[in-house]
Image 1 (cartoon, helix red, strand yellow):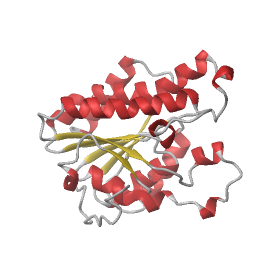
Image 2 (image 1 turned 90 degrees about the vertical axis):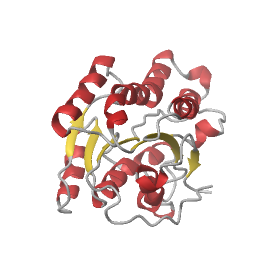
Image 3 (image 1 turned 180 degrees about the vertical axis):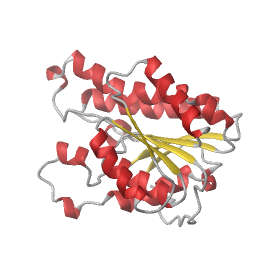
Image 4 (image 1 turned 60 degrees about the vertical axis):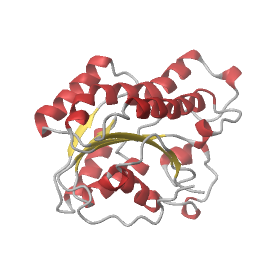
Length: 250
């Protein structure tokens, strides 16, 4: 359960912090980017489609808060050099990095494993597991130099409790939980570093609509309903929380 659901963040929770949000063009990523900006952060908006990122950029700009930054990158095709270049651009343009929300995800939809292809599994593992690992590693020097740095990985119910038909996506998301546990142990000696995983659950997002097209969207929890936990884990009040896998909903 989410024991932080009633958390009430102060308005200046993320003041002067630089936060990278991957998959910021829609759904939970867009909502989180907006929430972080409202609470003082300079947000780096990552995604594949510039037009979607520009829409989020305009919404943040209209708040009169710190000007966000757009950085498009296709995780499916990204190499180690691309991730290092990404981190270098953050260092050169913004000077520091205080947190990453790994929200970018990709899935094809449920199907029997016997009908899934090697190419599909490679894409699922690349986007959902390898890219978050590689980007965090590339940004590690920046995170280590921050006074208080938080990394949030997005896990999934399909990875937390695997069931039939979710194949490579389920395996990748189970890997995210293992990654978080291992990285938290390795960072235990660093009081300024922490990493946790969030499981959003059922939420009205484009990804949910892709896998459950018959649902009534208005009846589902909305991305903004989950933002208290996203803010808590990114802000300084979660300094002692490390290595947790947190369900946003019961």
